[in-house]
Length: 513
Ligand code: SAH
Image (cartoon, rainbow, N blue to C red; front, side, top):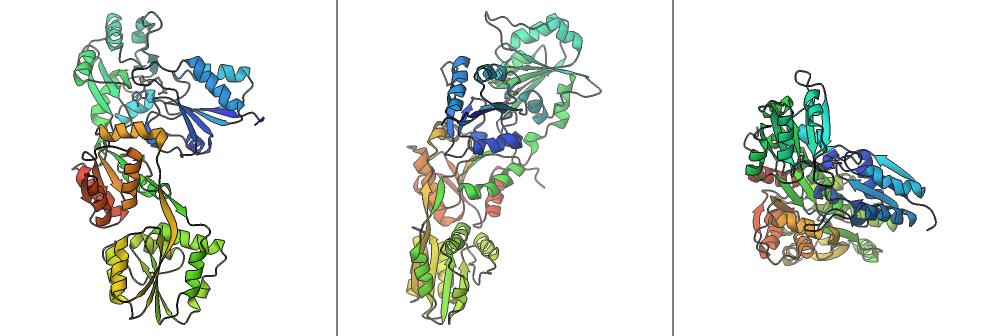
């Protein structure tokens, strides 16, 4: 490629994926390569499509960070290959993000770039703890200070000036130097009972805080085992957090779930859980791949409908969508079905499949009481006229349980594959996800089909699944999760709403109205 690439220097916000800007979110999907730091949250990393290349340049545990010159060189190199490079940083790229330094080499080589500001932890982390960084009754300014000592280990902070300003003080990268920061403020004349707080992993499900005063904060923070990343806030506004804290009070506040639905479907479940305050890792365990071309489908449809009654059976919303896509590709007119000398009946496995059919102008004649393959089979067998034909259009290797009731009833059955499900392996994210799941940070993993369980296992490659709390839709899915020894709960009905209800029941806060 001779064409010059471009670099977007963008902020990912402090953690909560909802705090990504619209522009950065779009870039996550449109970049060729993403160069990212340790502070970019897993919730956000999960939203990067698998085809986008990722280069991690953060600190690895026990290792030194990638030197700045090397990061600059990577950006230049990738852009010179003609790529669209997203340089993604925690918070805002220009707030202690060394963003300026990364532009120097690009400018020298005339690489085009754009800056996409992000939501900085300096104001967002206090906000998620209910602390407004300014308030007319208490303070008229806020100051963001680095607590990272310069070479030689000495803090370069003018404490006298800070105390005189009388504003809210926000220290980033100040956990290691907390003692020196607090004693510096006290020595400069700050009242020892000035409210102070330390806020760890703000805006994520794991956010924690210690509220104290400037004299006692270091000891209290140590006692609570506060780790990084965290910010220190000093000022009267800290007290307001007691009254205004809200994030943990949400019904699913402080909870984190991993959802395994295929990407095209995960967003409705993710959205519902996020609306209730949960953090959601979207890790689509499977992807659907249409059978293309699909002459078997059109052949089956041509032959279909020679008996008095014929049943066309759908077992998933994606099946419905794929069915119509394939008809469209082969220019097969749906009216051909209705011209046949047969009573055409349509069955759907559950309400979501029924809903998908409605959007194509078809109302299912039959939806079983319980939304699974065995009940669907039994229900059709009970309702179909003797000698009816049944054409099932669904995933390759769909549930076996559908066929025996139909065959036992003497119906003539044809099972046509519309798509296959393939496992998504997420190699780039493997270690982070395994860590989140095994450390107990993930409260539960949701599964909406047996194939999502299978895909999850393929991608995790764990030796032991007994610590995993699985919340499943339907018996079939639950059986698959049990096979791996997971702790299994089943939603009352096989619907997304019922799955959300189950999660609320198991993990929701009691105050729920
Ligand atoms: N550019 C970033 C700051 C980078 S410096 C921004 O605008 O937010 C890194 C420091 O940011 C950390 O040491 C910590 O003090 C703070 N920080 C970043 N994300 C945080 C979070 N989710 N919770 C608490 N502190 C955070």
